[in-house]
Image 1 (cartoon, one colour):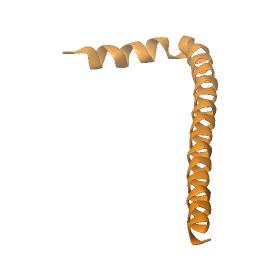
Image 2: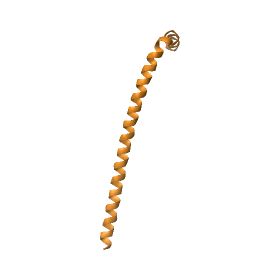
Image 3: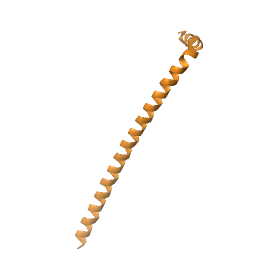
Image 4: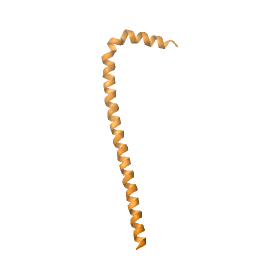
Length: 71
């Protein structure tokens, strides 16, 4: 119930001590987040490229098939 007040008091008392730790944690989290974001972006790009390649291949195959039928 009164945890909000406790947190604020704790913040004031431990603020100076925790600053370097918080900065360290934030830095590590930022690095991890960047790595994860890069990995996700790469995966998405690969998936999109594969889908596009498949679609193009299908379209090419259809066009070729249509040309064959015309002949």
